[in-house]
Length: 190
Image (cartoon, rainbow, N blue to C red; front, side, top):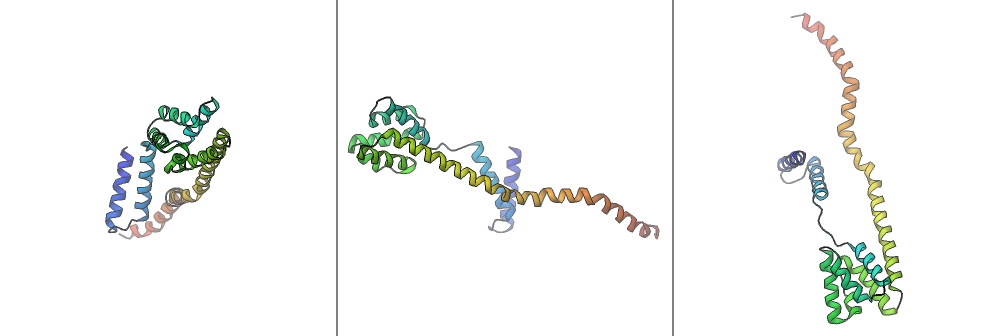
């Protein structure tokens, strides 16, 4: 925690010195602080994959789509519970098809697919399986893109921090010896 406070202090000094224009070091430090905060205290998100999995299990058990969504709403944590409960509430008022078609937010893509399958009579479980596969492929592609950017992002710390240290370790003793030899005649003149 002390490290994050130090990083935040350095970022604050860099931002203040350049009168609102973030310095490269300040911007990088602020990004690191934000990433660290997200790792330590992640925000709760709607788990679309869990909704899809639970709905598929309920449908395979023989429940209707409305009954499956009601059970999913009871069995998931917040904020997923609120999102699914809202869909179930709208389904009771306007009907299941229109409620699913009108759903927006994180559950929107899954709800629209379920609405299409419900309207056409297609297999709901197969629709959810296809959606899950596409979701996993999308997450995999996103993570792969982040991993591919990693060498470029690690170039800056390598050049600014590690390379100067290696140069000092390799050249430093020789440089000190040569400077001592050059300055030795000058100190003898005193």
